[in-house]
Length: 392
Ligand SMILES: Cc1cc2nc3c(=O)[nH]c(=O)nc-3n(C[C@H](O)[C@H](O)[C@H](O)COP(=O)(O)OP(=O)(O)OC[C@H]3O[C@@H](n4cnc5c(N)ncnc54)[C@H](O)[C@@H]3O)c2cc1C
Image (tube, rainbow, N blue to C red; front, side, top):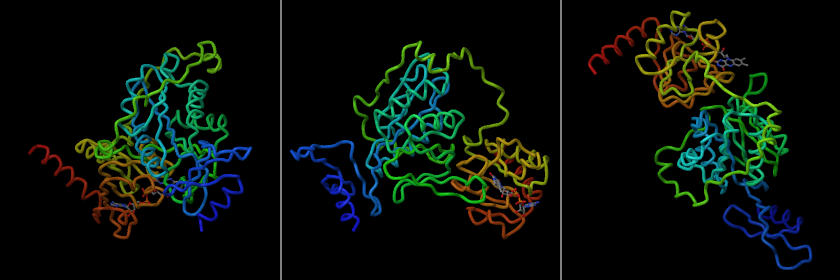
């Protein structure tokens, strides 16, 4: 049925089809009715009976700081590679910065099939104008169906500027991305009560910003199974003349950027998170969590209730309006398990929960649930961890 629909649509557009597995590669008849000419521009894909004109390549923004690739870039590289494998396209990175050419090799090992670099002292620091112009150049080279950026300070600034330049759709701050009858994105609704699923209309390039931790880097096995990159896998983009570059930065040149004082750990990078909820009872409870986190080599996280009570810093909040985390171990102490919280941590490797209410929803997503009082259990845990470290 889907095939008949596809064929009739194709015929109505003066296009014949050549089926190739799920793909339909198209050859457009010349205007004079002469020999069919291969047409790269038309690449229809049959997904679940619907015809989508989405280009299959995926472009992603590889973020760096001081010339070093950031973790979010490896997450996007892994996610883009897996999606590209499903769409039959390529995963292509855009890497701007100063002295970043060597980092392109890291992206190739992380899942990029190709990398567009733009290497210049002018790109040492982010600017919307210059980065935007170069990413537009990369996008016009590739004509991707999907463009991915991290939902980071830079990604959230760059994505809308790019959407305007490319006249593309934008789904911002997403907490999920997958293929199901086309590309689907999940994001919390503006009122925060529901989680929405979004799709992009056929044929439009869609730009998606994803929260850190939503996509995952390739596993060691996946990385080892990558084919050797093509000889021309890394390509330099054409840089504008210095005067033109300065104009693109609205006549402003950033001379120096100094690191501010880091207030808390980055919970999205932690392998172990010791998280507290309202059940921790107050700031003293969080000191206990801090001791456990130190013993386990992890960081402290929390539910929103604790931010509202002023017990923890906002940067520690996990969930819909906080951060998405995927540590190897998530220890949830006195957290009820409201979906606004679990949406940000359910992808964790091992979830262990302590709650005095046996019916607490957090137990539904836990690998190990301990029914009990945190004030009783946590001191025992500290004792056990300390003696374990002495034995070690
Ligand atoms: C728009 C919107 C966005 C939101 N975004 C987020 C978000 O990003 N992140 C987030 O976390 N929440 C968010 N929330 C809030 C969310 O709905 C919950 O209210 C919040 O997660 C509850 O936090 P909690 O589990 O710490 O507290 P509670 O729901 O009060 O649960 C406390 C738990 O501790 C247990 N407990 C109490 N004392 C003890 C003890 N001594 N020992 C053991 N267990 C004990 C209780 O049995 C209970 O299960 C959002 C809400 C809205 C409306």
